[in-house]
Amino acid sequence: MAKGGGGGGTDGWGQYFGQYITRPVVNNAVGGTSARSFTNLGLFNTLIGQVKAGDYVIIEFGHNDGTSGAVDNGNEDAVGDAYNLTQTVTESNGSTQVIRSFNFYITNAVQSLLAKGAIPIVSSQTPDNLWSGNVISPPSRFVPYAKEVAGNTSTVYVDHYDYVARAFQALGESTVNTFYPMDHLHTSPAGANVVAEAFVRGLLCSNSALKNFVNSAGKAVPSTLVLFHLSLKPRG
Picture 1: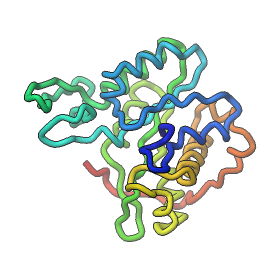
Picture 2: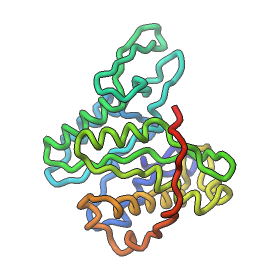
Picture 3: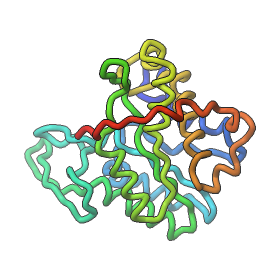
Picture 4: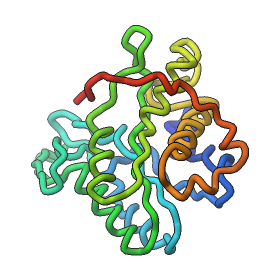
């Protein structure tokens, strides 16, 4: 989502979303952050301070939220979807820290945005470029977590994972591989644009009023693979 992606000629889909919508788009995504680190670095607070009533805010995390092993990396969330769930992790200096769940961090952000009169949209993370045979990898646990947060806060949910998976499945693994010049996570500008188009398609299929601001280019985004559906269980 972030500008510049992970370097090496990559870019995030947030940079391309604006060409499909008539309202101004500000991309506040920061590469390498998780729901936890975006909170702890004060980035959510900065965003909440900037928004005005009626602003739409798309929230999408998950790629950096997984467990980091024996030593905390500053990004991982407590494992599980309960709001009050906590977990103690060990820092590199041997000290410990209590962390909270993905649902805790995202729910708090959504509620703060709602209190400002903003209109949050909770979006699931996108797929990694990992395949099993000719099928894209199953979603991580953060995809259903995002859906759960949206449901619990009565917020619009866009299953960005599913719409990107549909697009990638249509294009095929060989083509999709060209979208990932560095690793299985960070897209090229062309790949980022496909991911942006997938979000637009998901938005058009949602009940969000933001879809009323999708322009002609956005409305022309193909409704790829309506028959394609991933029935695989989320990976942990």
